[in-house]
Length: 78
Image (cartoon, rainbow, N blue to C red; front, top):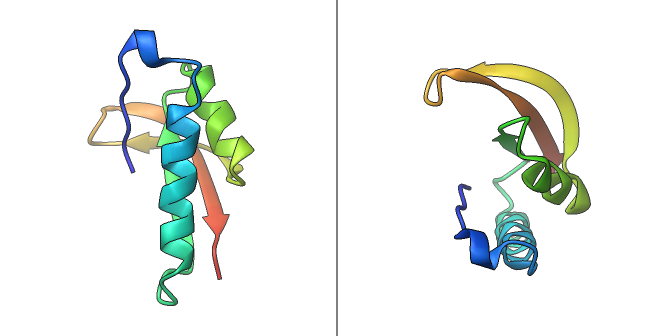
């Protein structure tokens, strides 16, 4: 899941609601066992959202698509 919001939409709960809805949707599919997520470590808002909706921090991991090391999270759904 990737989400980007304009700065004037920050702090209103939209990202939390969108991320939680994605996790809920994944839980409805019995084939999904785990969800992985990452965020720029400087984006503390996104890190808080991931933890708020149940993701567990697993460490830092290099991502080729963003060409940077990011905070890496997982959530078990089944």
